Image (tube, rainbow, N blue to C red):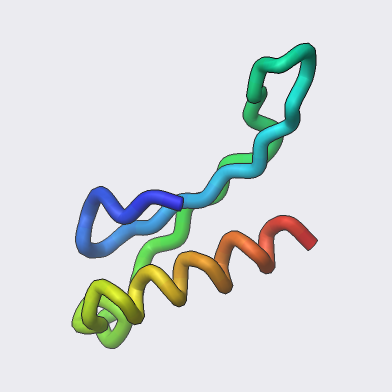
Length: 56
């Protein structure tokens, strides 16, 4: 999970193949006007939930 910009978040799922991590899925989410105002800890919690939902 990355929080590089205040209005976007991204998550990726990786697979371990011969001791190399290879990306399988990469997703981006644009935060709405309410989510942009969240504190950093709330944004990190939102990122965890977001990454969990894409890995289902």
